[in-house]
Picture 1: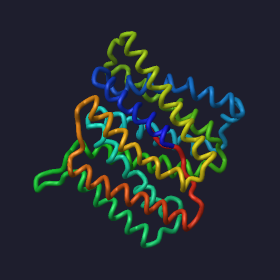
Picture 2 (picture 1 turned 60 degrees about the horizontal axis):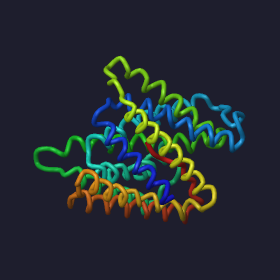
Picture 3 (picture 1 turned 120 degrees about the vertical axis):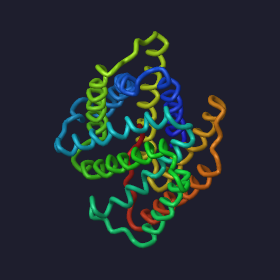
Picture 4 (picture 1 turned 90 degrees about the vertical axis):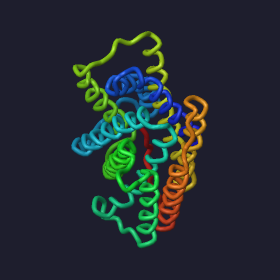
Length: 283
């Protein structure tokens, strides 16, 4: 899991680097295109094309829609905000999953987890740097991304009983590819060979990261490996400092600490209540 989150954070850094010169839709399209390289390698080594069969088309379609929205918003967040800031705000995702589990999945959430959700959202408010006049407007983007990631993960829980991981991953990426292609008329930029090479590296890194994460859940208990997803904030802080010279301020550090602590406590309570079923996430 630590390796997976390191690769995903490197992918985020590459996205930020490439996104300064290319439109978001163009970056997403070519990233999705090159993700098919590791994706198809996974498919052919774990059951072949038969694993891509879909039973619940509506569910897979909804998951693909939420996946596309999440990817677009996370990509935008990484480009507009410091890497560590965006990563910390995206940790609100598990809080949204817990809050939405009752209305969307009918799961019972006790007062302890609701209290943790409340503390976590206080952390989010702190990271938004509220003032008497306004909040940091750009910080709203990763918060909305976290909300869509919660919808994506809850939908994944719903369809995982009938759909394989290969099918969910493959068709979501197909939908993302076609969705991003529609941004072409709105101003794609000519690309140099270096741009294509960077996008290829980005797609392969993200695809491999998802495979590594899936393997982490395959061989280790979710309750054991899931907390290590928060190592992303370490990688994001280091990469942000060494590449762009940015350092998280007191708002991000204090608010992020509350969000991470809340997420870990929620995971702890879910583990006590029942076995944790977690799906791979990222842009």
